[in-house]
Figure 1: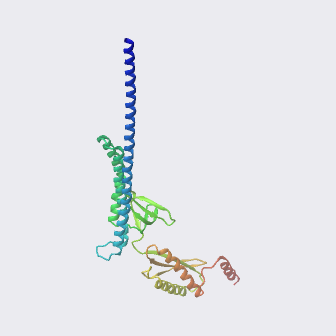
Figure 2: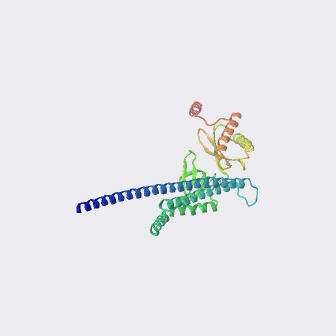
Figure 3: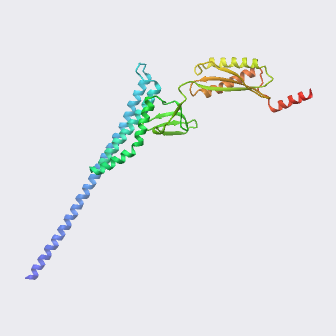
Length: 307
């Protein structure tokens, strides 16, 4: 009798053991499915956020470009000039990009981690605040650069040790391209002083060396005629008359005459090269020799010694 009872208890225990195992297996399957569903759901939400960020930036940049183009083409009194419109456009693009990135990253973090505790949010806020100090400094300095019109897109500037053309002015940094093709990104907060070379006409200088045997008055008249002719052909870039300073150096082998002019920003180098060529052609046409070389100088000294 007791043996049958023990057998029944053993069977009941085995049944309960199998039931528990089945329940555990079922719960694991349910939890696993829920986890997969949760991951897929979060991944889809993140993908939607990234797509919205991408199209927000694309559409925003298109609208900003239309605004800038309209300002450039407009003749209204309250419209911006071309340079300031381009500069404002670059700043607006920068603001748009950083705003969309900040909002998107905030939403993605909330999706991934769900509800954050107050302590965690406070720590995160302090960390972001400390990290954003330089960003705020860059933002404020960038605002004053734009507001005071210190320089704009397309200007030739010197910022610290960097010299080049301003390619863009953003909310955080200014990008300039130097004359070797290198691109420099300068945080706005680190800009302490700026030299803008594009506000006024830029001076260029041409020095002409001629033989000391030439008639100096004749040479100056030839150079003056060449300069006047050159200016008349380049009035688009040269507003004032080209000045002949006169003789600035006397040496045994040469006499140096200096010519000075003012050209539109970034055109001074081209005007200098072309004026030098025009003066050389004028001197050749009038058979005026440039400075003596060493051989000619030696021959002259021999002749004088023979006399």
